[in-house]
Amino acid sequence: MLSILIPIYNHNVTQLISDLHRQATDQFIDFEIIAFEDGSVLHYDQNKAICQKLNCRHIASEKNIGRSASRNLLAREARYDHLLFMDCDARVCSDHFIEKYLAFCHEECVVIGGTAYDPDEHNPAYSLRLKYGREREARTAAERSKNNFATFNFLISKTIFDKISFDESIRGYGHEDMLFGHQLKQLGYEFIQIENPLIHTGLDENTVFLKKTEEATANLLKLHKTGRYPFLTSESTLLRKYSTVQKAGLRPVMAMLYNLLAIGMTSRLCSPKPSLWLFDLYKLLFMCQLSLKK
Image 1 (tube, one colour):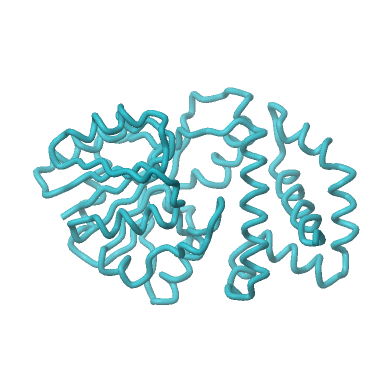
Image 2 (tube, rainbow, N blue to C red; image 1 turned 180 degrees about the vertical axis):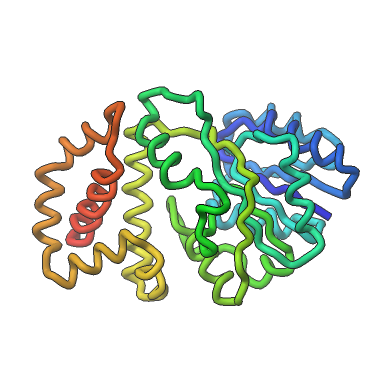
């Protein structure tokens, strides 16, 4: 019935797997949990040990193959008709998490459960990640657009997944979910948004989150420049703004502003009270500056 698939990179998943295993067992269903260690070494022994539970499996790659290839590998390994994907830096926050997804395991579907953040977490070292997560990601099912797709926590029929899979040519951090979601829409599948979040626990410190944001921005620009993904401009607010700046011939001005303001903006974004408006501007200026590099 249900294959629960968790790609891992240097994260301890013992509590996550323990909670998922207990809930699935209590539902008296056919299930499996497959954890894939993607070239990581931290917590390897603990993760392997927890997968000694009945219906659990731990597989590993010595080399990091990336987010897209990891998910494709897990889907190929899966035995059952419905695939429940989740990121490893997640925590179960409801005793009915598995039960809610089982209601959709009798049909072809794509179901998005959502993301939540610990309301008791207020460490200023994570202020930017928390601000972004709580205001941009932690939305209720009603608030999410019907076209909103995210890989953090979703259920998909294996028959649907096998028609698409993740694009393994995309390396680096960010935007493989956008391309996968677009392919689903092209095939005519709508996303069912439900209230069934996992708590995102893998918080990056502010400077680390900014570096990952820069990597994701660079990846988005690279994909845009290939010309293979013309839909990206309509689906990415950042690319739409960039295209407007480009058409107006203002990229050199924006790049100069980045060089002048980057240090001050970084300081403000890493403060206890960061601004998401400034965060969006930072990404746009960074993209313009990056686009002019040879």
